[in-house]
Length: 156
Image (tube, rainbow, N blue to C red; front, side, top):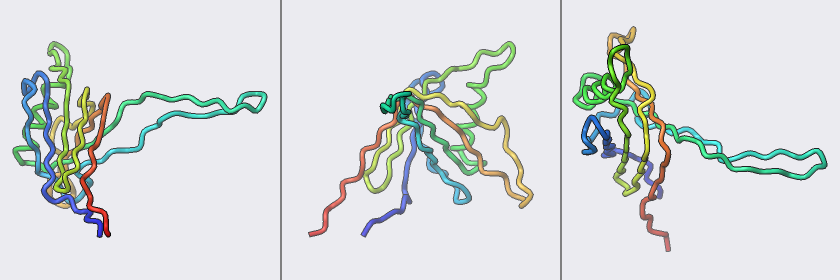
């Protein structure tokens, strides 16, 4: 039987300038939105030439990952610092961190994302009408993303 739980997942982020490349573990994942979201990527395309011949090509595209965290946690504080340090403003130079993100799941599956950039994050925490702080999300783009699947025993 397949076990789909991800309880115990750990994400680490290494930022070339902010952390000096040292990994920082993150585990404060919310329940009200997907903690890690990875959309599909376009691998290539196809068209038919004027004489009916199929023409195909491959496309290299960045891989997107959105990370959600519970607000007012040490994980959130770290990520807000990363946003502030990488936000360009007049008279302020951004850190331009090169990001490596690794997700290790209890099943043994490991996702490694390299050559990344933090491309989106709120400059401050928002408030929800429910009386809670909003879950915070951070969007990254990576040059490479590879996942090592868990070792799964085959049924006899």
